[in-house]
Image (cartoon, rainbow, N blue to C red; front, side, top):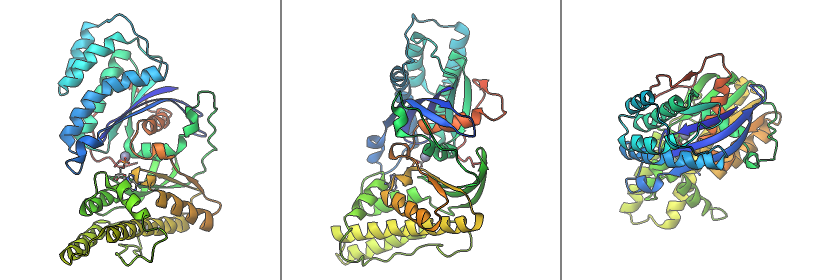
Length: 398
Ligand code: KG4
Ligand code: ZN
């Protein structure tokens, strides 16, 4: 089936067109088009995402991004504008809180022929509610005019499915060929809002075994970057700075590894961030915070996070004996984490396979939402056209 997916849970507007086949046993995804509109420049000067600005930008980006995506996916056909008066009224109601989006919608959508797609998937949560609402309302309005079923998707399930999409699938001739995924699987989600260890005995059924008690790992990277006066988003900046210490003398910084030996599968990153803050304040007062010291702090902070993640993942591997480890979320863009996790699994658990998203699908995007939407569509639930949907800021995987 062909799925149009929409993602607006945070500060990136994502729209993708994906052809999905294979069923639960061997899901395969061919990316017909994948588009992202980043708002980093807008939020950068505030040092973090401003929900009201994110909402406004999604409203501006969605319609142009949709036409671009349909065009690149070969599904954009223009027609003479036709409007059903009944739909116009309903659409005004659905988009009443997004006047700018409503205007763009009414200008552009009636000029497009109903594209040949089978369903629309949209992120329902978790995320920033004002941002989520824009994507949901847009998806509902499209679902209504095109009479296509709408699939609500959990953003976290999207991150877990990101590893099923292969960059080479972008090649229109290549046949996707994911090997069958063996369950039970252990899933590790590392993003700006989540740090979770989840067990699954099959797609759509999840049991959380551990999570963060305070800050999420990506959030900690972003906050520590701010303490070190690095630009937003901090994750990539920390890893860049940390890399500068490679092949240098031993790192003189030694930060705590919170909860590394605790008997559970939980995490805590807030104390680690505070340890960095106190250290930086002390070094500043002593006039000792030079560039090299900053890079050593970045490197040890990064390694502290990785040590805890790897220790807890390893403990879960020993206890639950999964056959596969699935990772997802923006922080898996971190090359050190990718390498160290891969090394730990191949060395210590050689029979366990690792599903890791390619770099282009690690941070928020709509292709992963299409993949999760496909799996959801295979469940017995009946899909509806323009169903009532609410954004859900907090939304556990279950
Ligand atoms: O999954 P994502 O795009 O958004 C959420 O669902 O939260 O993750 C964004 C997070 C940000 O905190 C960002 O700093 C972090 O992922 N991140 C990284 C790297 N690239 C992105 N963290 C560490 N190293 C990176 N290379
Ligand atoms: Zn995300």
